[in-house]
Image (cartoon, rainbow, N blue to C red; front, side):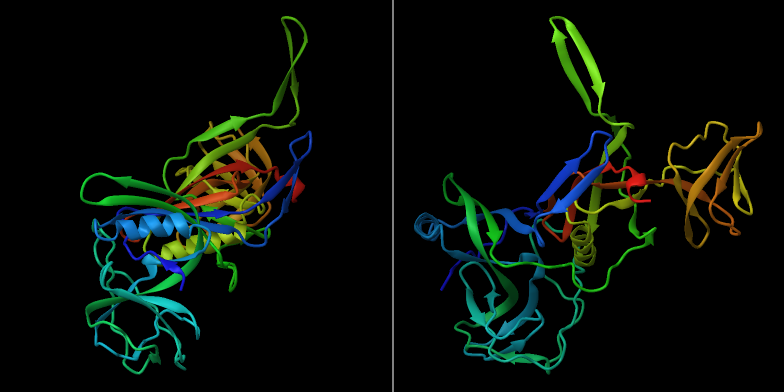
Length: 392
């Protein structure tokens, strides 16, 4: 039996997805990207407390079995089962497990056991939603109960549980541990890397697309950008410095912060980052930062009374009362009273807001999701502009 950690995290966990992308960049700033991993490596970091009676068990296990496979519960997927009798052989299969997969029957760190599926149900598993308000510790609540007919055979249960939870177990390797003792309890910080592949890229490709690339609407907070240019400093003689510009244009870079609330948003975010694959794939970023009220349209022309509007972007998102259109600017003309934008489409709907579209990619291959104590998460990802003429 593999080693298992059954203590709940005392604070939020951090999950990291690590791709491996090789960037080949030319002198004018254009780039080619080669993905060296089909799927990312997934790692977790979290901390848990051990009681004085079992801290020696973990200390010895971590010291002597560090290189072996460990099992850690997926605490975010824990589902409440209720009371389970001693020797019970059937429980609902609501984790979509397969025959032979191991799971954890859990009530507390001392009252728990590893079990495995022996027979699968014919019915498909239900989807559940966590609806309990945010608390200081991980809690598991269901929106609706599981029908009795969706059950599966398991090995006989060894304990009588008054309030049991079921959690899937993830096989992993330990990469680092930190052990801190201060009085009655001890805190153990662990870092693990999953030994099996998690693939969220299968299934339908969600998201809106424009010119074949996904559009991300930046509704996640403050827009703070940095303009950067690759400039080499060459010292030919003592005290003489020459600046050599490698890129033809400047690039914009910024950091996107995603605030995720609930399991549904977290799963959708994971599917999104799997589609982007670290630094590999480009996508459109819609800033949502231009609110041009005094704007009217005439066939393929947009007239903006704001004289200071002079877009440096070639692509725009036009927000209508019930939809969004994506267009390319063909020509910009100052008529004296307004700015005239000629676009590549005929727009008949009224415009309530205009936003810039920037073609960009992630500027990191390590995407981290930091979980709060209750199904709320945050991810901060740096992005950088990609020149669109290498695509269109």
